[in-house]
Image (cartoon, rainbow, N blue to C red; front, side, top):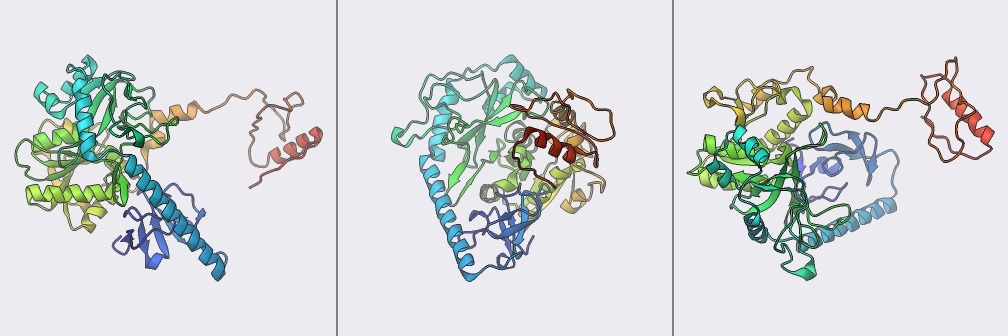
Length: 451
């Protein structure tokens, strides 16, 4: 990774125009790692580059200049002009979005007032969850957790400090009368200066196995796409917040722990560490904030070593390990030394750092030793979960017609209009020939897509 240079105002990504450092450039732009187009497919072409490697959990897709056809000087110049126009448009949109956003200080003042009007008593289910995880009344108050109901009503108006700019607080409805939330408890997300810059909700109940338990409060919805999201807008970048939790006294070190609420908070209090949390462990997706908060942590601790605490079963999940590899690579690139907390948490059933009862069991190993723990046979566990099986089952169809013959054919009594018809047979079973015969009977023109 050291041969790749992060994008900047002087070195933009030729694919997406990013200048915030999310993308990487190699060999003068011949090869690019692009984060905004991380979901691109192999062979896809964007702005004169072809995707040569899909993202495998690291957050980037890999691109190379497309030489399948030689460009004329005019074509190349037109492409550069379109790319520059796109950059200007993106910069204009970012500037407009940032101008509509509340400052971090304004967010803090508004969120503090909002939280103060919510009931002081937690819902019994929310309190039970926190007590189960080791929270006392003192720790609950210190963390600032507050229970909310579906579409929690508000007494005050929030976010409309300058109405003509439609400056709404993320998570508040357009008329500022209620929170865009479901039932659960709110986790205040503070930056390194102690300002509450966002709120995340822990749902009291999830509707399905694959639904996330934690949700950001946001005003950006399908009905209000211009609404404010929880992103932090700074000059040159917009990133999701990273939560900073500090112990009561002087921190004795620096740590990374997954999540923004319970887990990093308990790490900070129990291990006396300046702890930075990221939703879903996505520290590398907020590189500018991460770098800034690490420097703040260095100022408070005087150490340039970071301890990371993987969850139980992380080493069996290839995509999670790729995510850790990205984080480790980024921190080493910035000159930080790392230690990985290890208490033999090999399986999903093993405790996470906040679930441990005996911290003397925690040993520290090097990043290389940690990454080497991944089994060569380990694959993403997605397809082995009940959630995945439920997802597949919900998308299966029972046939209305079954045919017991050598070659496939469409029955004569199937509808010929206002219907979607799906046919299934093995390779070489005659599906295409049957489709041609079926269309010929209708006497209609059609387009057939083959592969």
